[in-house]
Length: 165
Image (cartoon, rainbow, N blue to C red; front, side, top):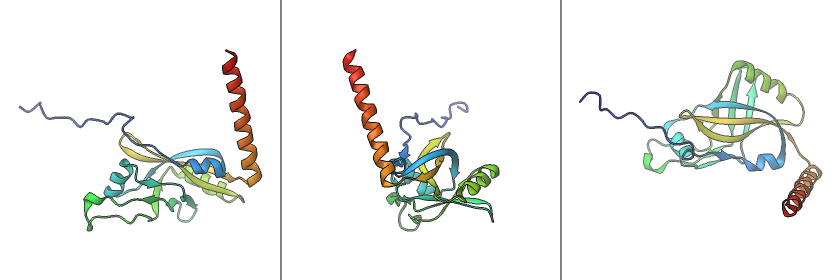
């Protein structure tokens, strides 16, 4: 039968992993965000699907000449079933894919003092690995304490309202 070939089934959204950089929200005040594609090799994609990624030490560098975005310091673990001959380098510099205007905008924002481009989240969209990059301004110790105090007071107010009902 010619018509009975099986079609490739899409994985449900809940089976595709989302790797988040929770440390970034603690250390930085995140402003604007941009979604970028990632240039990965086959074994890297398999490791990302298996959630074998560490975003905590990563950062993004935007360059004007040549115009590009690079992902540094993100550890994507080796994929053991691939064997020794077909492995990738876990801490290599990876190219990010974005529109020209977005790269120019991010490179311009990076010129300001105290501004960093921070990888926030890796997820899959239509079968492609995507990286959410945020423009982050570093927080001082006092800023972190204020944010924690504000969050705690909001929780207390929410608890009190919930008890009242």
